[in-house]
Every structure is written in C-alpha cells, then in structure tokens.
Length: 248
Image (cartoon, rainbow, N blue to C red; front, side):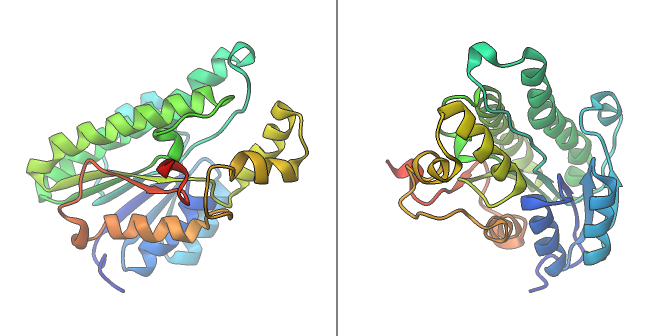
C-alpha cells in the first residue's frame, strides 16, 4: 500500500516497541518518517532500516519543545514510561515526570505541528493512549492519570482541528508485547507478591477474553489507517484494542 505517499510523519518513542512498529508501517505505506527518541542509537537504527530520519530528542526538555515548529502531516504521540507502586509510596517527582512526558510533551508537539497542518488543510494526530485511558488499575496512578489526560487533549485537538482538515484520535491497546510490558510484569509481581507467570495470567490478561498479548504491528496497522485519507471522518474517537477487556 502507498496510501501515505508524500506525507511526512513524526513518531515519538520510535526506537522500539509500538513506536518502531508504527514508524515501519507508516514508511511501508509511503510516508517519510522521522524517528524520534531519547535513545539516539536506537532511533538511528530504525531510521536507517526504513529510510527515514532520526531525531534524538529529550521530550522532558519542555522549554525547547515550546519553541519548536514542526512541518509534519502525521504526528504519532507514543513515547511513555511506566511505574508500578501504591499511591502512598509513589515518588512525587516520578509522578510529575510521567505527566510531563505523556501529557505536556504531546501538547507541545501538537501545538508545534498544528500551524503547518492548518495551512495545508490536512493533518493527522494519533495519540497512543491505552485501555488505561478509559479504565483504571491499582498501583498505576501516574500512568492512568496521564492517559486519561491524553484522551482529553486528543478530543480538544479534534474539536479545534476539524474545521482545518485535522483529525485527532486515540488508540487504546491493552497489554502489548514490548519491553515496557516486560518491565511491568516484574514490577507487578513485586507489588502483588506473586510469581511473574501469574502476573500475565491473573493480572495482565484477567479481564481480556482473548488470552494473549497484542503485537506491536497490530497497533501500527490501526495507527496507519487513522493517518490515511480513508479515516478522514473519524476524529475525537478512542479506538480500543484490548481483547474485550473494556466490554465488561
């Protein structure tokens, strides 16, 4: 498919996991992709693989992001981290960091991209949210808070961008097979006091009727479709990919 031929895309957190899968899928469909990540080597590796451009960027440097101007047609806000801990033990500085990375940075990137999108009458903002943008789980206060905030940011972007040909949507996967989830399994085992294998069966997938982890490429295909002309009337939406978790 070459339905994104001629489009310029920016994907954050694209050195691995969901972000790298999105970068590969967008490039395969013809987009010119900028691979953004704090991991410079990882970003360069993916960029070289897909014929894109690497951008080594610290999204916590919000001062620099506030001065940014982006000439991109497709913006995929994907970068994120996770910390698992009870609220009373959750480090306040870690809570602030997660809000900065997963809410303020996407806001600043959207802010930087909209003028170009408005000028050309076309834009696609795809925010990688989570089922935790719609549901809560214990021990993930910062992550759940940030993803709920990202949902609101996405909807406001949709309302303001619509008259200018810009859509904004969230993709809400359950547990995806990524290094971030592997790390969560170990942390959840400690938090719940159970073996890691039981975390997968009894914590991660307990609410899902399809008992497997989601593959990053599955998320990427949905992102690419939302970025295409075919999804021009879809905006302000949250596309759940959770194996039936939120159907309960």
